[in-house]
Length: 222
Image (cartoon, rainbow, N blue to C red; front, top):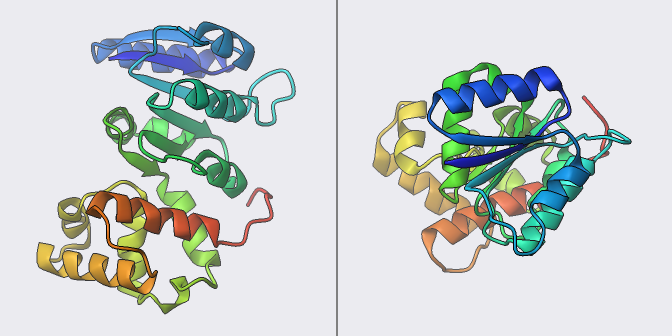
């Protein structure tokens, strides 16, 4: 794959470049959001996936996220995997405000688990949706309204794994239950959330969005 990385930490940028190059990928790195936006502007050759930090120079607030949202508006099918130092639910909500296919939000700590990071990268590049398990856990812990409170503990587990981009088969393996049981839970979740009949993949995405949209968030770090 052709991968573009936007990361101001020289050590992390170098580490990711070495890792992905060793996996056979072509990698281009940028140290500022402005450089990234200039390189991938209108008419640019779009990479297979963009990996960007949330916080980039000069203010180290949300330049990387803003750049990702802007580039998705220019290139709607550009897969983007956003890295964050902390669980910042406000940023996750902003990132997933539009079409969530080909989007991921993971913590930088996840990079240390090479297999898990590469799996997330591959799923996002394949137009999947990935949300970090720690983000999932914190959102579930804060959920109080919008039909989500009617979910059983097992259904909440299943929804959390759906948010991580897991298929029904992968969820069954993780929870050590049969596939029919997972399918039953997924159907129950979608029904309780009042989601309209549509393709299964689309309804799954809507379920995750409903979950993000109706969870209290004060924008503070944990």
